[in-house]
Image 1 (cartoon, chains in turn cyan, orange):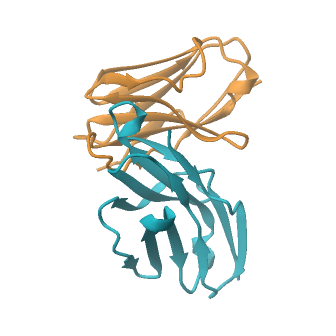
Image 2 (cartoon, rainbow over the protein chains, first blue to last red):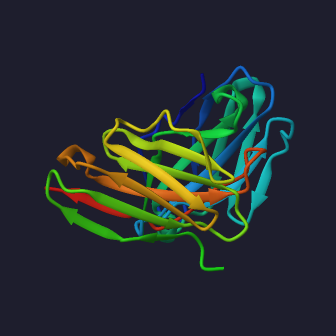
Amino acid sequence: AQKVTQAQTEISVVEKEDVTLDCVYETRDTTYYLFWYKQPPSGELVFLIRRNSFDEQNEISGRYSWNFQKSTSSFNFTITASQVVDSAVYFCALSDLLSGGSYIPTFGRGTSLIVHP
Amino acid sequence: DAGVIQSPRHEVTEMGQEVTLRCKPISGHNSLFWYRQTMMRGLELLIYFNNNVPIDDSGMPEDRFSAKMPNASFSTLKIQPSEPRDSAVYFCASGYGGEGNEQFFGPGTRLTVL
């Protein structure tokens, strides 16, 4: 079985603050994939990043950075100098083969980020 | 590319009526997913197709739900008869199957069953 936990239901920050969204996952598979998606108020989910289980290098893309730590089964997402446009629901997802031979993703419940001006 | 296209964007129907949701995946993608999103249950995978073949339909809630993918460029999700508890946003997503690749989501269909 696989499981993705996003313990933070909602986070509220003021513009320019840094914010970290937590994601903890469970899997018995050695090969798996982790994702982050953004769902802005418009409703459409937008892919942000994909990481495989063999690549623990942290990644930075502009104001976004991701910290993947297999030792703690975490894949956290940090937004530096947050902006109002970052307000959205962010989903962490996990795909592994233990779902029955196919990489089918399981999504966390999401973290709603509200950035106040 | 136009992205994943879903229709209708909004649907309001009465209990007992048949509802058909449509999806056109991104050209060249060989996997297609149908999801349902509600406040109570979050984002749930309903069914997954690979090369037009249903691979996993364990998320389909009951026999009232059915999905088809007659060709690589079209899929439908049908609910017959619809019930108020089916009210949700239904997303279609497509991607390249196999190695856990990312998915590209459509704008969703907001279904309200009265």
